[in-house]
Image (cartoon, rainbow, N blue to C red; front, side, top):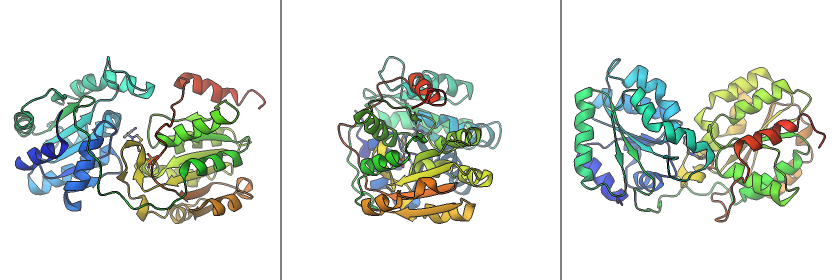
Length: 375
Ligand SMILES: Cc1ncc(C[n+]2csc(CCOP(=O)(O)OP(=O)(O)O)c2C)c(N)n1
């Protein structure tokens, strides 16, 4: 296995000192190490992976040095455009290293949302003509691999990818943890919101939030008929918008995370512009990418309620305790939307948090049946 601190040092020794990206469960230890060891000026957790390629390009344009962009392979979709129309040797030719966590590698058991992406990770890189090397726990001479990757990125004047297999890096515990934004337990907050949503339509975001909602439904009625957006991080607010506009007679509740909302934040302006009266957006803001290791987002600096108000949501609030939420929920589902409720919550999730037992297609059917069947 590769020691993440050694890896960071090997990069520095080669003058690769600027790191940007979006955390990934499989690269958890290496991105936590970047958060701890690299100063703020040389490490930026970006809003999304495409933005990270942009930041890296700006760094290279102004220093001539090679940056590293790290991501989960789910982020490949976000980087296609800036790779092909910015950093490609056929356009500006901007050398950079990409470090890509390979979820869903063929033959390795993984969650359904990672299977197709995992199967197509190398073919996608081939199609984009991005050269790559696959790193694993058995890789020795990582320094030599980096030397060749850097030389190739410089020779081609374009990106070079290191695709990282599961368990390549040794565990590393993040030390610079973001202070808690509140001590309100998120699972409890989710259960209160889901209950208040009554027979409204609920959609939830990628990661722990969907898993907590699922567990709450299973413990209650035993059935989950909410749409659990296990993949496509950052898009649940727009899926919910599509539902709300098509079904104005239903109250629609979107349970979002701070990292996910920030990833494609422009969508909030589109929600506000269409003014769906039945749309209720809830952001559970813990200030971190909790599902993939707790690396910070900019959630602590965000005032989502104020932002929503400025964008044109009808009403918006922010709160951070169970008592406030219980009182608030007496009236909220009857307010005209679009509404935004930011709930500041604590970090972390239960160690024994389950995962949906149903496939995404089964989840879709149960969700779609809600529009046919009486409850
Ligand atoms: C495009 C993309 N990039 C990265 C990931 C990996 N990922 C899964 S959940 C998550 C964190 C989500 O953060 P947030 O919305 O704040 O919710 P929390 O994890 O704190 O519950 C990340 C980065 C992903 N699934 N898709």
